[in-house]
Image 1 (cartoon, one colour):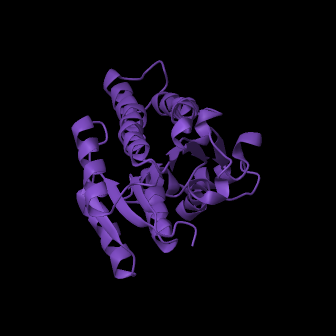
Image 2 (cartoon, rainbow, N blue to C red):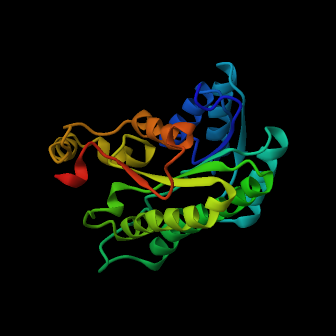
Image 3 (cartoon, rainbow, N blue to C red):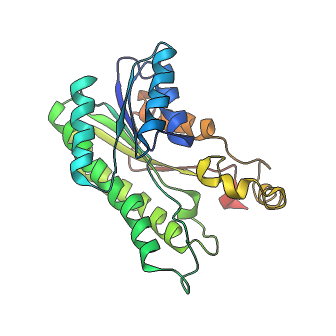
Length: 252
């Protein structure tokens, strides 16, 4: 098992990619802190892991509030042990996202608060905990293939996700001396709760598939498998990288 005896914290783990990652980490031997703004969803995932013979706790956290992030790190450390792995995944596609010509201030603020500030706060406090443990660790941030290309009408999402590869390189540079590796995954379209609205439109989905070299769209487990690789010792010589996981979308 690739994460045997490790302690992992996964944000945005109540559904979708975060849920798939938390469950996969548990199958690979890790104890998991399941962190999400939706406390009931987090508890459901933790219960499922525990019922399957794993070890997990649920923590309700708003990653945009530093005090809550500190609470999550302290709770995870107290109940599970020193954190070895962070999947820094929590993010949103803000309602009302739009063209730069029509974007509203509240939409900009929401995207930047969760997708950038929240990721920085979690990286700060988990990074400190890993540094203080003296055991190093691995952090995997979730970006998007829209950090490489852009789609019309998603100005705040594209902008916020484009910042994450830069944040990843900055974190990798700051934390390398403590034996902490930091990488990112950049998923293409993936079937999750966040994309459920558009996923119900067969015409749009069919046209989208044609823009992917593999002629298929992503499932949460597709992304989770790549997060696992970057979090494990299989990627011991990888840091500061962004792994695009998009079925060939960005090269079409």
